[in-house]
Length: 311
Image 1 (cartoon, rainbow, N blue to C red):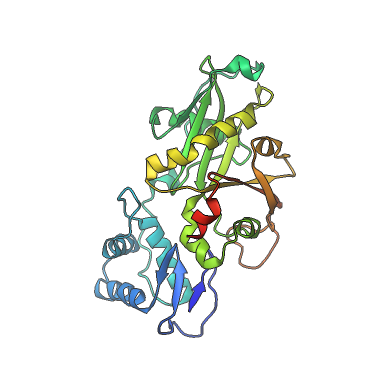
Image 2: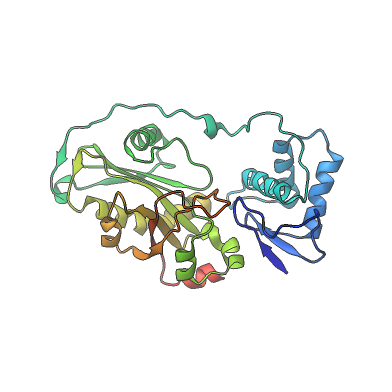
């Protein structure tokens, strides 16, 4: 028997902190049964001086829970522990200090850059230079400054697996940037398009990335630039992801606020509209419509994406 836990929610509720024998719950892409829960409780009970930070790292070492590049998944472990506590299955030690995650308090530095109006044909900007910033980290400050200052959602940092792209024209002027990060935990329109059950989604979610930011600065007015850049990036996305993380990537998604944008550049780049969101936030626990509904668009990266995502 498996019980799926949605991010930030705890279902079903139990009157006691008991996991039924042989029951398995799925959290953070891992199956947690009575044996795993006993290991976690033993860590907590035998090491009362350990902080939550220490517990999450030791749990990763105990389970050999790592990324494909060998890094321990301590943030995933910390989230798993918090969800278990919310469910009443464990009691964590009191918080001692703010999380040591350096990204939480990061300040984006403003960077001067060319901002003269760019009004030209796409051909006049060629050849475009599209750089994935893990290869050229010196460009990261400019990338972050552009998104923080000029994207309507702003930007401070990203956590988890991600790819960042900065695009310059033939004169070296920045004309676009794009960020791909963690996929949405649950999206009915996307899940239905793929044919996912909750259990399969939990196992295969990391094979999807979300285009969380895409920016063409307001001073850049070049017809077809947006769809051209999206097309170029998508063609290399799978290889870049594998190079950086040694993991497969099968599909990319995005959510377009149709009260602001039409999303035509995505459709022109062969992204598929598959429905819309419900208007709930990631942390919604009460089924309240709190944000505008968004169009859901996806772009398969291989013809066999359904087979890869269902494996």
